[in-house]
Length: 449
Image (cartoon, rainbow, N blue to C red; front, side, top):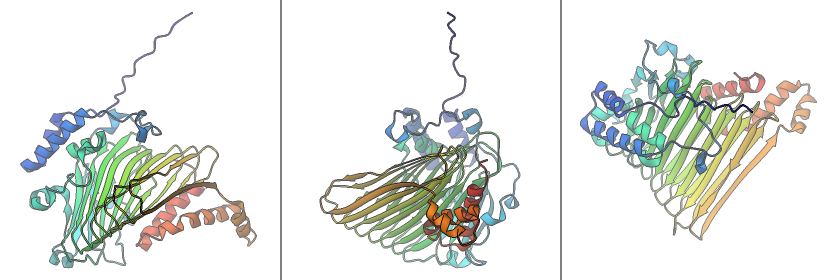
């Protein structure tokens, strides 16, 4: 009998960064001392934490070990691309011919920046995060990864805190309404690693609407997006936040996203996932103030060999709070999706109302979708419920449409469009809805990339 020795793989299982990379990144940007120290402190946390593994409860359904870190951890650097590189439909005005501001990053570099004068006059700050760190230290230093996303939450959160490369900052002062929407575009033209950050602060009795687009051009090599989003909504404030992701098929996303909502405040958060090879995203709403309200709406469509793992939490840290979550998704080919949801209520947080639902549409026999709702209630006067449903394309409505002279492919397309329409209508921008609907229809009728 011949015994064959198993060769050890030389493929790296972790990113290759060192503390010298952190120092070099900070020095190249001429960052203030407090930010440099913050990055180095996060690096210490990163070194102490293990990489996630299948033995971790929240990772046991998602194996990312096939990522080629030798390709994916090379920081994306600008290569001369300009605003014209970004598809027009991702940077056009959101309402008519107007928008409050537009910030476009290509390969981590700002290629376009504008803000309406009326917003500037109102004291609203909308700029890139690096500039904000230098010019608005009093606002950024005490909010950047100190209240919402924390470095100690995981290996990728710590890495992001140490190595974030670019980001956007929005500040709306108290008693101020940003009448026009703000728009951020993060677009990559070649593979590698990008670590984008969103920091939004809407102070007491203020109001804003914001859209963030994430996308990249096609590539053969692996890429990694290691991101963070922090939404800080003050008392009696109102924030509508839309984030849409359409990475290329060789991108692995690892992101932490959290909102903190104050007393009598309202957050309407809409997320969409269409692209990427693998997405592992944590999305959490913390209802911190009495009477606060948080709604999260999510949609996703996976095809080919895509894997989406979305981990949501609705945390009621105060009484008389309301959370409402609805995620709708579809999968075809050999794609796989995972949604894990949790409603949490701390002790004595009475008279809360929490709801979560996951609706899943299987479009092929080889696709797999997991929906795992959960409740963790430590109060006795609450109203909480959850549900997860799974189904295939129903024949009855398809037959009904065909009986009206509509061909089967078109009829199936119309039924699937109807399934997602409830969520798409929550997006307040008609042109964006049309763009998303077209992208979904391409997935439905086309073959996987």
